[in-house]
Image (cartoon, rainbow, N blue to C red; front, side):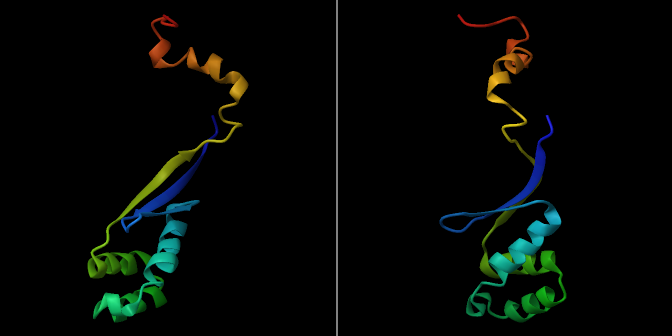
Amino acid sequence: MTASSVAYAVVHTEPPSIFLADDIELLHRVLALEVVARTDPVLLGEAAASIRDALLEERWGDATVEWIRATGTGIDVYDGKSVYTDDDLPADMIGAQLQFTRLFADGGGHG
């Protein structure tokens, strides 16, 4: 299998927001632009100035951590998760692949 990988984040708003990116570095920029920078500065209070500075200095992680502290909203970030395509698991091959998995290792099959 040649599955590609992706980084993603779950922002614990109501409802939760999910962001996907090709890698963790891009994900940090996405969070900075799509979550942190789009927040009303009134909601950030005194932290708004330091968050602005961090964004202008391209310190994405610092801006996001400061945003989390200011808003109390959690963000879970995950890196290196696999993304599978039909080329990775073709429908006509799944039966053959299943027989080599752990669940079928003892020769168990139907009933």
